[in-house]
Image 1 (cartoon, rainbow, N blue to C red):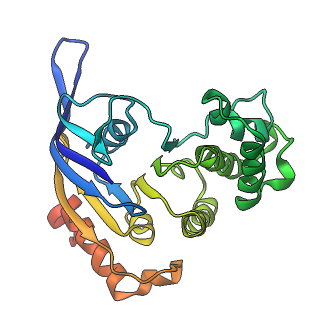
Image 2 (cartoon, rainbow, N blue to C red):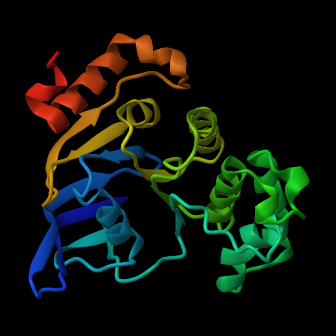
Length: 255
């Protein structure tokens, strides 16, 4: 469904030099596949996500969705950032409906869908509240509902749980698995957490230090549905160990 073909991305620095974030990256993702992107800080994970979203253009190569080149933001793509970036003056319902309004598709069906999504993420009773009245985890739930309201085929998630406390993060990880099971779609999920990546993904793409290249793609053979109890599973430990060795090298097994 998503093709990344020999993609490189460089950004101009203030001194006039070029900083290469990604170099010669080629990947392909199937419809309804859940893929996590991991790697050291600055390796280009978020840049890769923004290339798929059409928010930035590649310096070389191309990104395609169902064979068509991505040359800007698309209606079939939803995005969830680390910060929920909700409109502080709008109700939670209006925040969820914001993409539909921007696309001029805020129909009665869209309103019904927004209410259904708020129910799906456990926020039905907070539809009339404002963001300041919700916890960080609840705001991020609203952000996920907002990304789904226009029924995208692709969901791009850039460290969506990174700013949350550990318990809320685990709760939303399981919530995301449930939502994906109820409403399958292609998900690309950036994370710094190796256990989170293994628990969520069908495959984990490991990027090298900048300039980011594909170090390996680790297939996760855990059965679904999944839970945190699977962290003791041999396959979980195999995948996590492989990813750590790719990122940390000999340091992954050092005492």
